[in-house]
Image 1 (cartoon, rainbow, N blue to C red):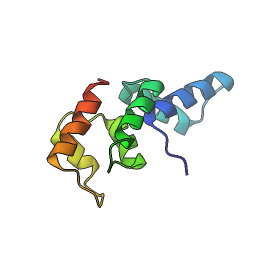
Image 2: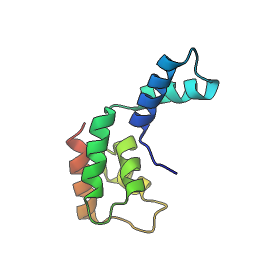
Image 3: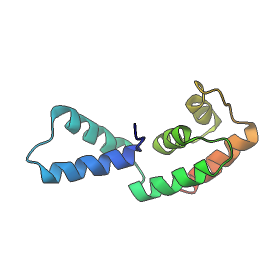
Image 4: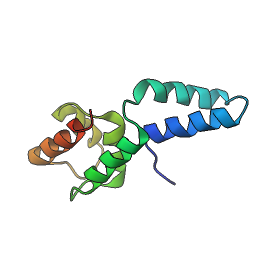
Length: 104
């Protein structure tokens, strides 16, 4: 299964909508949600994910979640990692937030 960001979903569905006469109900709902929730372009999101995965302990799945949610504080970051086996240290959380702030 390929992991994609919400920004990529938005681009894919928008492109699909231009190619087809009409999107399915589920696709329309997903497109509407992505249009409301996404604040970065797909390219900026990919850059952010690359920077996050360059950190030693941040995996691809966590990087995608961070890029989709764009956490603003430590609690937001901790919520992303709440079900993970790895919990970032205070310094790692600060670094994650610094990287995210470069893009918002």
